[in-house]
Image (cartoon, rainbow, N blue to C red; front, side, top):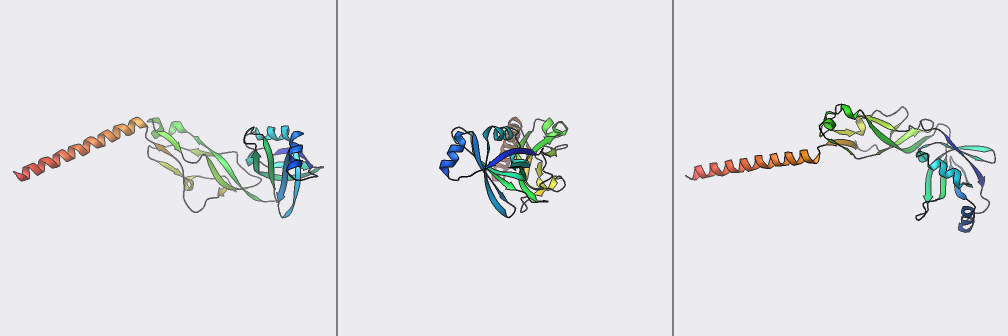
Length: 218
């Protein structure tokens, strides 16, 4: 599970675009804490501290303890708005978590034991359809990643969500289909050879058919 992160915040006394721009000039980022059937709280955080958390690479999938005036609130980041030109964070939404809450998160997948896949050893290529899985997890047990074992996979084999053992307390947020996560495909050279063999076989069959037609006419 990702380590719990923390950040200090201060209440926002004024709302509106003008107030938000003034905060950003001071090196602060406007934010809000909402959810758990409680009133939303407008806050602002230090831009430098926020960028440090964003730099962890798992900010959006981590519990974040937000401290405001000595009171700590357990949250999950739900959205970060960035400046389209400078890529600086402009606003953050923190979702307040109730005790025992389940959260929807995107967890990266990692493929292991590739050396034990006959298809990959023959030169096959791992074609990844989904680099992340959309999961419902216990807020206290959000996995860092989902490991997928590719031992025994041959060229043409696919991995579906139904074949993956998810961590305890986690389940796929997509329940209406058994979607594909990845598959082992033939390399271009092998595909070309197969195509040529197939074309030669078809040509031979056509020639044989023509010969038979010629004999029947005689």
